[in-house]
Picture 1 (cartoon, one colour):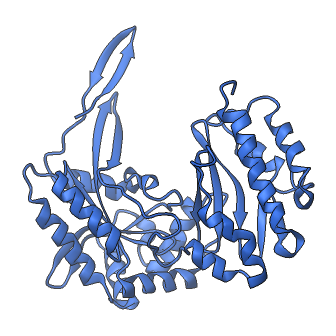
Picture 2 (cartoon, helix red, strand yellow):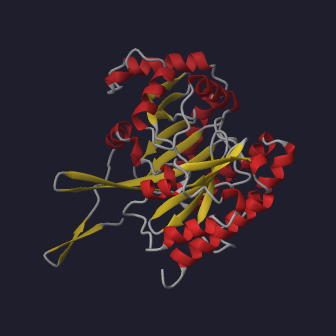
Picture 3 (cartoon, one colour):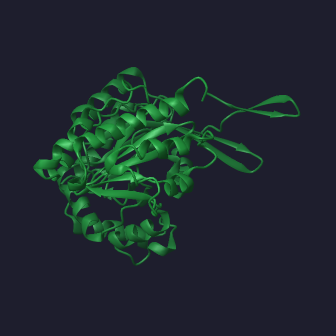
Length: 377
């Protein structure tokens, strides 16, 4: 068990976490604050969860502790087993049984069960009463959307949820005090070879001066490779993105299917969305999204975007933005992108050549190394 260390008047003081002896208090906290679940550890492009069920009843199978969903239609089953010496094998099997019961459930039946929860006393969000699942998630989207959201379509959401139900593509999360190596191995095995994602998680709560601080992590969090990982309806794979391009342009993007950040000595990742992908690069304690690829065009970050998104987590050395602007101006297709009026400068594939993207990514790597990864940075 870890602890927080507070230093007050030069004197260190340990703050030990509160132990959850029962499952119900933790369930209630996560029902009210689903952000306690550290989804960013398993999905860089995660969307905030909306709780759509508490003790979600399934015929002849018991009840799911918590059921959640996001705007992409990804259904998350959340179970809790915190008692000491609990048989985790039974918990894993029970959670999989819940997923099997949801599998192939028609959307309208699923929607009815969710609406019943919204109408019950178990749902504490008054705004959800009288709403269908699609209406509730649209409300959720309006209250959680960020600047970079692609937009929300009820039609696409219903289609994605229906597809995930029919294919049995769910996310399963089990909160536990601990998991031994046998359970960890079994969970990783299931995660790699099944049609669903399953993880074990734990959280600690600290109380100090009337505040509650949660520290959560996944005990098991092995992830699929970027190119080949399983997907839920709503997110495309890189291979599917390539198939969405016209044949004459797929060659522009295909080299980046195997782009190795580590080999290029930079830190970052490609994140898939519903239509395309984005390239993120780690800078200090934050991250920068510098490139987006879509079926018809690519987008390059502009000076306005840099200035709007940079905050205290990202320290931009003096001269780095000017250097970026000078460097990008030497790539013929993108020479005017840095000073474009919007936050992104977009270019149809017909306007660029494959070598333009090669030059762009080569420049980004060298720029990041020069300003953020060198010893002088």
